[in-house]
Length: 224
Image 1 (cartoon, helix red, strand yellow):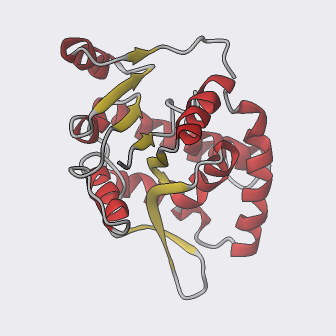
Image 2 (cartoon, helix red, strand yellow):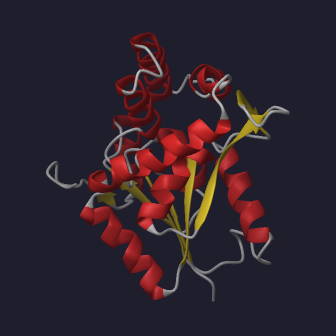
Image 3 (cartoon, one colour):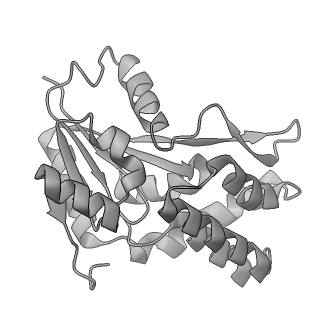
């Protein structure tokens, strides 16, 4: 019977935020100024508080690329992947590799825009990526709008169900299903898999996981 392993990205597989790493990467190249970082950090605080409007966050961060030629963005993404390579923790890489070696169908499920999550999916060699889709205009430039429903909070369930339906399955018909996450924002999906796992969880998720008897993984601060 099919088994699946789902992984949140930021602060779960990696001990940092992809969007912030991207923002700092472009600030260092003179593409963004420090004001973009301040705005991004404010959105991060909203995320932690559970009050984030994910569409507004992406309008601010991805929308800052609206006038950048797609070829430039593509080149930066290639450089970004190599910039992140040494920051991939061995422990979470081994976790993913273990599921893949067992034959589990593996996917990263993240609110991060697909074009930013793809470099990390490649580094982890995860074959499937469920992410928020960034709209583009007639020129191929990213507008900052989210196309369809963002892969965020309860909508992560919808993204997973559509992905499984394309393979003739659903969350109800697979065997075991794991989901690893750090955030209480992911409780909707954590609560519908057979094996929820909290990874370096925030305070709200830690309390919930301990109350429910879910496994809690606290990676060493020296990992990666």
